[in-house]
Length: 129
Image (tube, rainbow, N blue to C red; front, side, top):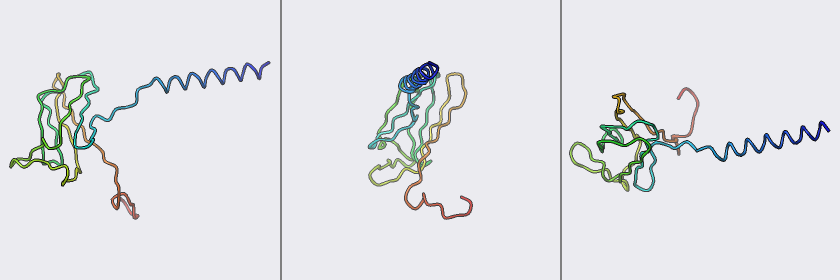
């Protein structure tokens, strides 16, 4: 009798865990790159204003605001450096991607996309990295 009750309790706990995992939202990367388009997702409850997005600390695009809970998409060819040269996705590599903005209350927002190291950069040869 106790074994049956214990087995039923284990089944109920497993079902509750499965439902909890299935119903939870996966964490969204705030800056996603896909085929020459950058998508910025503002998943916060604050509107971001005076938004600047930088590629390689050289090419920039600005947008007045990104509303709370919304997305902003921009082609990578829209990023321009100080001398007017555009970012060429087919010929240039993205090594750094940053977003700088302010919330509606004036607090700073700073995001930096972390890229996975691949190729020879991903090899750790010993010593401190």
